[in-house]
Length: 223
Ligand SMILES: C[S@@+](CC[C@H](N)C(=O)[O-])C[C@H]1O[C@@H](n2cnc3c(N)ncnc32)[C@H](O)[C@@H]1O
Image 1 (cartoon, rainbow, N blue to C red):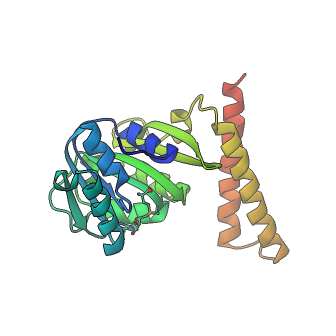
Image 2 (cartoon, rainbow, N blue to C red; image 1 turned 120 degrees about the vertical axis):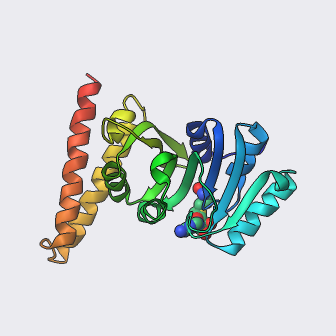
Image 3 (cartoon, rainbow, N blue to C red; image 1 turned 120 degrees about the horizontal axis):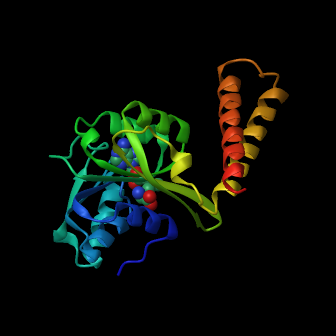
């Protein structure tokens, strides 16, 4: 069985099994090969916007005897991918790129999304909330000394509550503290440059308030 890093193992676990799945921005291609080797999806596809990473994915599949079992697409997001998929995996990309990909796809509201954003989480979750997605399950995972977030979302009732989906996750308090410290440093940087007014400062201050509220809420769960 092809080995997945802890980050990608969390992504694969959230994907579970089902009919059809596409790994968007696949690069090395280990995730679709893992899906094939585990037989958990009827149809497996992989796409990348760049030819080099797509070739890398094909060669991973070739080495593992999975070449004929995965459909490969050179595509910006899902734009050049024919048909629709029940599960869409996007991992290792910035949240704003994910929003571009998701918002350009006409059938995305019918898909289960497995997302593992590397940045711009607030932009991504606010787009998902606005598009009617609910966070069904989420996990934090430590990989090579860094913490990563992955979650599954689908349209439905109840709103997008990532924090609720992370209830009880042992890494959550530490991740929130780290985020508060990161935002604090960024705010202090702006203050040093006498830029403590303006949109950038206000945005960071708003995010810091959200993180502080989250820290307070999480501390009540632990009582
Ligand atoms: C950092 S790699 C992540 C690879 C893998 N998904 C993972 O999580 O390990 C990001 C990949 O996404 C691809 N990518 C970036 N923007 C994309 C887009 N709009 N559509 C499809 N692929 C994209 C890049 O070419 C690159 O191969």
